[in-house]
Length: 227
Image (cartoon, rainbow, N blue to C red; front, top):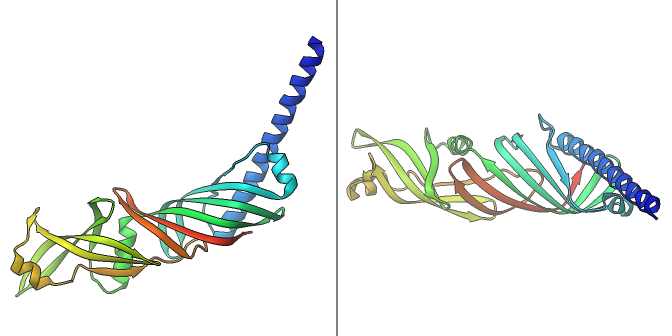
């Protein structure tokens, strides 16, 4: 009986090892496909959920696949990092698959948003965390009646489809509230409206959150092809 149990345990260990090896190989193939699809400079990290993997692989459908990449150049924007969560992934061949739904988070550095603002002809502005998840600080120099002022406008961020709208809620000079006359004089110079470029074939912007390290953009899409 003891030898029988040793044999059973040994077989289970072998099956688990084979399952782990097969999953590791599949994760590498998915990473290669994602890297090629989006022309990434570095191979992303991939995690295939579910156990046993071989049973899922036999049905050619994976419940969930997570992809994590850093320093990603996508749609003219340099992302600090991106996390894609792919659901109901249909495997069509050894090098291609289709995810039924994908939701993702991408961290856009404030310097990249500032570049997008400059593309809109808004001049030299600096964007930074405004102290709250929905607040962005826009810094710049404005000229009023021949005098230059270095100001910081705290703007409330609103999301509509794939558009970010920034509307000024208060203005400060040297950390103090700007005089009302000056606020009225600069008007809406610090208000911004621009579209977030489509990334990873994801077409819908689901939300945005300001963090000290950048703007976290939530996106979603369906029937996303890999490879």
